[in-house]
Length: 195
Image 1 (cartoon, rainbow, N blue to C red):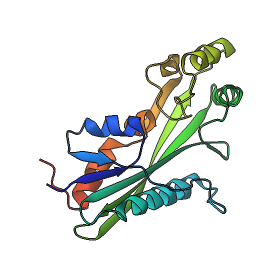
Image 2: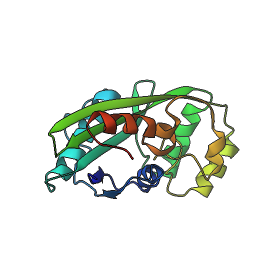
Image 3: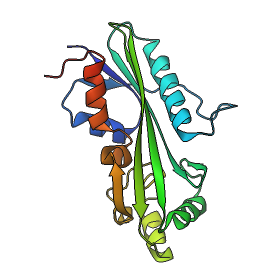
Image 4: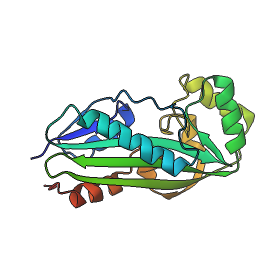
């Protein structure tokens, strides 16, 4: 059985991948995500960063399958990443209130045993309900690290689990930053035998 190496330190992605009951390890990459001249297009950005992360981790392995990821939100021409403060998080959620936004995850898979490479982007559309200021504050007081709901990006376990009224596309993508249904398809495509 080939070993799978996830190029991520995200506990959410690791937990979700564990649902597949496939043996894997996880390693962080040392990729600078704020590099100069990075793409403004969210699809190009997540695809590029996922590639850099996978290649960084793959460079220290001779065999196995390496999977890199990167995720961002997108709303009205702006890339949404983790906010720097509670005030920024409040303003972000206030803007998203009653609106639709997109969540993108880039996936880059390298099979070191057969030299196959696959790169994909998974997109999820999220419609939010109208949020009162008190509801946003309640959530932010629950989650002091602002790591949920298009901020870091796991909406479960907090009041923010009530914010999305409709999700189109991969819910695994939005909930955990890892579109499991797409990952399984790509693993088979790249030569991994699931049993």
